[in-house]
Length: 160
Figure (cartoon, one colour):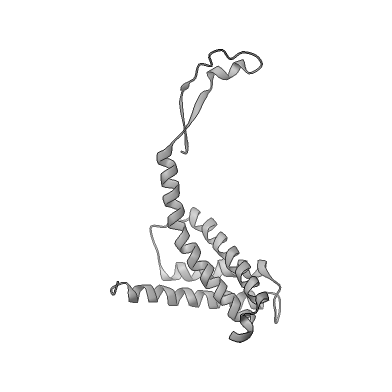
């Protein structure tokens, strides 16, 4: 709890309309909890950055239909940034509610796909096919990036 309550405070010299406040406990700041909140934010920053990068890259490539030169236009970069930002925010919102002591490949791929789908739908209308086609393809590409990142981290871990 960020705020802890002490014994009721005696409001010396306090009179008037709010004289009933003397029986309420006084809130004090719990700095230990504040420090653990900062540590919690640090544990959420890395997955949020990973999901941002995966959603950004997937959105950029699918939106430009694989044409790397067309992908790096200002319009595409802005739309991919919106997609990645929404994906990162949704990632944090989901991870706050989830058990983060376990981690698996399927969990990372599913989380990447879901947050990218939400980010892509939010960022822009589909550039091809029905409205759901591009977000679905983008989320599949993002899940593939998450799988590659999962195995890449496992492969590089013994070297580090």
